[in-house]
Image (cartoon, rainbow, N blue to C red; front, side, top):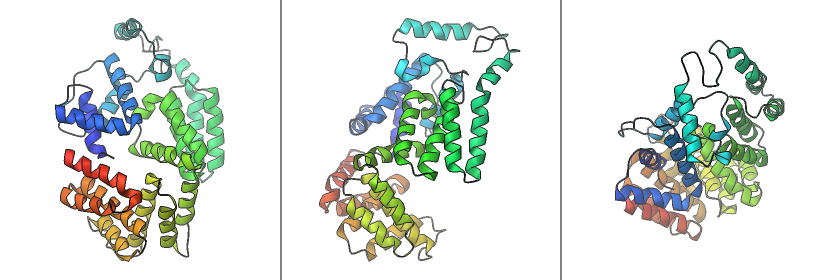
Length: 347
């Protein structure tokens, strides 16, 4: 996988200006491997085109800024239906007319077409879902996860177009994934967030995308890999052995294998064998685990994990290359490691 920061910077820059030939090839290579990323980029591009604005400076990590800009410039409660990708107006003239109407609203009118003094109707319209959101958060704080999920799901079903509907959908998915471990439901909820509340998706934290990728992969084995990973995490007798078995049992589940490898490193740090305050604690922990494992596949996975850390976090590309070469020696990681090596060469 291309480094997230590099890809997000290129995606954001491409929204406002042409990329260099090399950067365009890098982005296209990523889109070829991850069609969902292309879909997200095209949705963002179409959206930005309907709300023109001055391009931001390209000297920082831009994609978060672009997502914030989209939120700021298009925050029109309640959200118009034309902003939902599944039902965007196909006519450019129709889109343009909407933008013009919004721009011509007088100072005494808000973007809902109501007088600024008539906010009560909008607030009242969203109040059932807003109240349900507050209740759900309170229930989560008190570990009442199932009640939080069911109550919020019911409120969202009856208020799918409320201004806070995207926020509610994201919370539903988070509860299902992180607290209830209802992975089939979490998969459906994150997919719904992506398809029905795409603007909320565009402004979502990075972990939301990571979870969607993880769930899409685990769905191929009916989420057994995630349930086995949970069991390994809670194993009190032999957690390291249980995590090794997860890695060995799912050679085609790259995201799950990665999660298991990181869990092994966290166990080593928590045990006190590695200084948790050290800036390279995770690297040291992965190296420690690799030294003590007897399973060739686990060793290869740990090496691949080291390669990703060296590449994305420390930009030590020679060390990353060495780690990927080591990982490529195992058949289960050969293709993945070779793709990483090719990426390093391209960069």
